[in-house]
Structure formats: C-alpha cells, structure tokens
Image 1 (cartoon, rainbow, N blue to C red):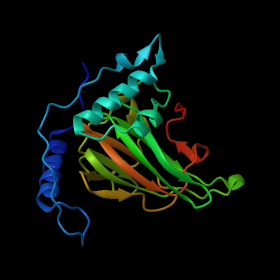
Image 2: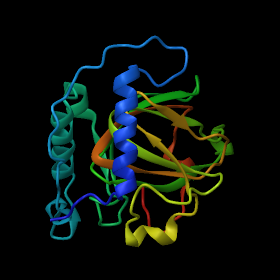
Image 3: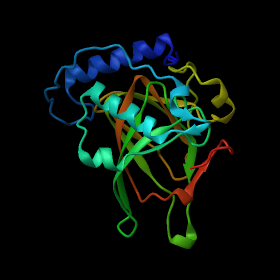
Image 4: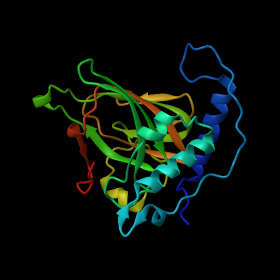
Length: 233
C-alpha cells in the first residue's frame, strides 16, 4: 500500500501551522480571532494507485469516491452540487495517487473576469507544475489566482528563492518537471497565491490531504501550459 510522502520537517511544520491556527483562530492580519471547532485526530487515509485503473484506463468513478471519502474524513459537507459537479483528472499520467486533483467550479465568468472553485487533493497528491498564458484570440489575459485552505494542509511552490530543505519528499517521476521551489506551507485559514502573471507554480498536499478554495480571474484550459509535456488536461 502506498503511503503519503512527507518529510519529518513537514510534519513539524504542519504541527506548527495547526497550533498557530487553533491558537489564533485566523491567519490574515487584522481579523478578529474566531472559534475553531475541534476535530478528532484520525489516521490519514491511504489509497492504492491500482484501485483507480481498470484495464489500464483511469476510473473516474473510483476517483470521485476517494474524494468523497476525503470529504467525510474532514467533515466537509457533501452537498448535492459537489457530488454532481465534481471533476477529476490524473492528467493522463497514470499515477493518480501521486498526480491528480478533484475540483468543483462554483463560478467562471469570462466577461466579468472572475472564477471560484473548490480543489480536493488526496494525501501527498500533486497538482503538477504549470502556468497560465494569455489567449489573445479569446481576449483572455494570463490567469491570476489565490488559494485558501479549508481542511488539511498543502505546500505551494512558486518562483523566488528556492527553499533549501523542502517539507515534502518529491515523487521520483515528477522531479524532472519541477523547476520552481520557493515553498509556502499552508494550513486551515491560510492564504497565498501567485505573485505575477505567467508565474510557474505547483502544489503537494500534506499527509492528510487538502481541501482548498481557489479564487481567480477567468480560467480556460486553453491557457494552461505544463512543464511535463506528457500531461493532457
């Protein structure tokens, strides 16, 4: 059985994050502390990659069930809109437990240029390195985005001074396609995002997985570019 790939430093970092968030009740300066409901600690979920493939083909229904299990693990409300609209992908790499995501798009308005979606990541699952370009023929500017963690934790990576000791253990097959290494650890209620248009970025979920909200400008798959040329999205 496969287990999440996190370093000892990552576990210490996550413990610090959790303690800080629980103590303050907030992560953004200027906000009043709020009560944070307790959640009984449980062993992280464990998934086997082979359980998401049938006859060599990605099993989307199995992937959705895994994300629903993740929601129940965290106590995330499984609204009918989530069950009905959940999108899943393994980016055509065949390594869903390592590289993949689930998402529910709440809004994506081209004319008003804004979008909002929920992102679901299994333990140690990676959103692969990518960036967003302009699509002049559609009048689309490079996407800007931010992420607010709701449950679990994630480690976001972008351009800037490379972090000397990463909090995660990189998946071996992803290493050649990860070029930006400035790490930002995020726990519940904490926010970060890309700092400029065209910035390369990627994420790896913590040992329990992660559920986060993305707020951004308009998104179109036609504007996404991946460092790994084998990815299909």
